[in-house]
Length: 238
Image (tube, rainbow, N blue to C red; front, side, top):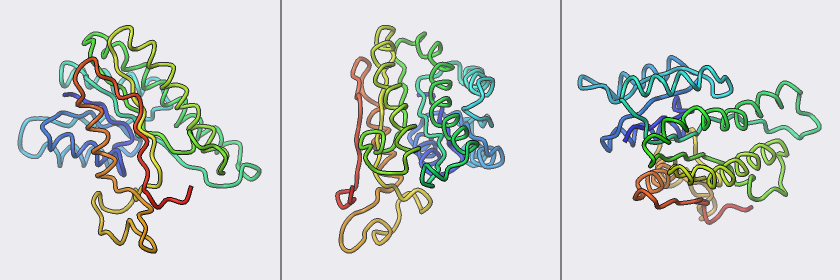
C-alpha cells in the first residue's frame, strides 16, 4: 500500500508513517518542517529501496497538496490512501484569539483537510479502492467545552468526512474519520504507563494506540468502510 501521510514530521503522523513502513508499506511524507521529514525519510529508507518520499509542504496551500500527490505518483506509481494528521492548535478563550490565529487554524485544519482530500481523490478514484482517513478531535463531536475555535474546526472536518463519504462511495473510495480523546502526543509512541495514567485512571492514549486504529481502518477489505472510530481513554473527564 502507498500512503500519503500529512503532518508526518512529528507526533501521530510520524508514528503512523513509521509503522506503515515497518509493516512493508510505502509512504509519502508531507509536512511544513522540511528538515524533519527529509531526515525521517532518510532513516526509513536506510540502505535499501526507497519506501519513504519526503515532500515538504503545507496542506493549506493548494500547489503543495498537488505536488505531494504528483510526487507520490511519480515515486510509487499509484497512491492507495491518505491519512491526514496535519493540524494546529489555539488554546486561548475565543474572546482573546487574534484574527491571524483564527485564519491559520482554519486554513490548516479545515481548508487543508479539504484541499488534500481534493488533490488525492482523482488518484484514488482510478484504483476504485482507495481510502481517505482524517484524524479529528473529540470536540468535533462534543462541542459544549472550550476552546471554541477547536470545536469549530473539528466540527467542520466531521462535516467534510460525513458528506464526502457518500460522494466518494459512488466511485469506490472509502472515507473514514478517527476521533480522538486526549493523546500523549509529545512523549514516546509507547510511553511508560505512568505517562498515560493519573490517580489510577487512564487519562491519555498513546500514539501507538492511535496508529493501531488507523491501520485497522486502512487494512479493511475493499468495499468495507469503517465510517468512524471514536477512541478515548476511559478516565478522561469529558
